[in-house]
Length: 81
Image (cartoon, rainbow, N blue to C red; front, side, top):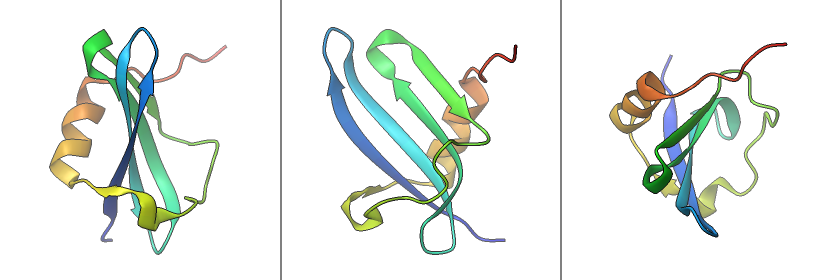
């Protein structure tokens, strides 16, 4: 299956720029997502994201599978329990 990759950015006061990357299935279905704050060294993974449909994908910037997978491999999955 072929996916597309998109990202958004916003400032997090006191931490720097935050980037959210999405792995999209179909037109706007979110399969996986992650959030990174490079200046703080944080990468949060969402293998089962709470939001399943991306609002306004046309407002997102393009990303790539390579960028997404590199960050995913370095990220921290949410803790259970």
